[in-house]
View 1 (cartoon, rainbow, N blue to C red):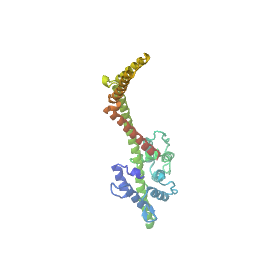
View 2 (cartoon, rainbow, N blue to C red):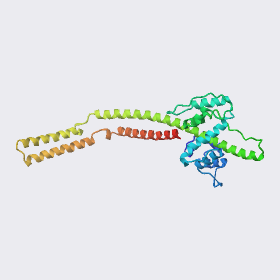
View 3 (cartoon, rainbow, N blue to C red):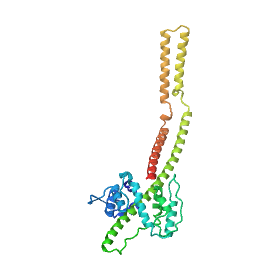
View 4 (cartoon, helix red, strand yellow):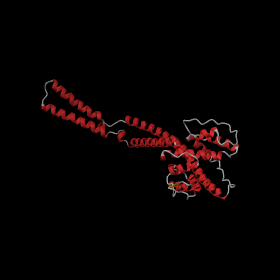
Length: 322
């Protein structure tokens, strides 16, 4: 919850700030505490809950959910459960036409690349508390993202407090309704933000993959061009090896003729060693991929692109699994 709050765009942050009664641009922890005050989630009954797991645990209990188990790792599942309860509250009094429009829009906004969307069942009971397609959507992360995206343009307002219950009941119910409304708006915005972030990151990954393929093609062409570039005679390692080979042949001939002597062998060995030094020096100084600035720059770009793609893959998987 906190992680997504920190990634809201200005319009999403404005909606959350308005719902929670905080200043625009408030930090995530400030929003959590404001929601805790509105929902009546307190630590030791005095201080507003300062973490999202404490907030969602107590808010969920007030909505009839069991105690939250799992700590911070269970926050996304608790968000889905609470949002499901609140969506059902808005679903029940909604007119039939609006219910049908919500389901159609949610199925159109389905963003999972692995799971197929649920089948659209007919909405034939205007007073039904739930619906098979809605329930199937609310059981999956992709479905909750889709429902949140659909409710942006086709809202399902929460029921208003009943004013016929007397003054005391009005005060308590209105306070509870205010907290539920703030939590409802915040959770819808967070799951719409997940829908947006997932779409943006997938688009970004596609762009990076295309850029990576282009760079790798250019890198291969550059490597081929460098290999085909003729080298000067003095920078060709084969020249030094030829001198060494000639010195070795000279030594072999003298040994075969039994005419070997230090006066003959020492110069030949020196010339052979000089040829090896020449070959090594030429290999180090001759132009090649490792000494080409453009080639090295493209290699660095390929490494950077692959790192960015891996990071996006982790972010996409995390959003899909929440």
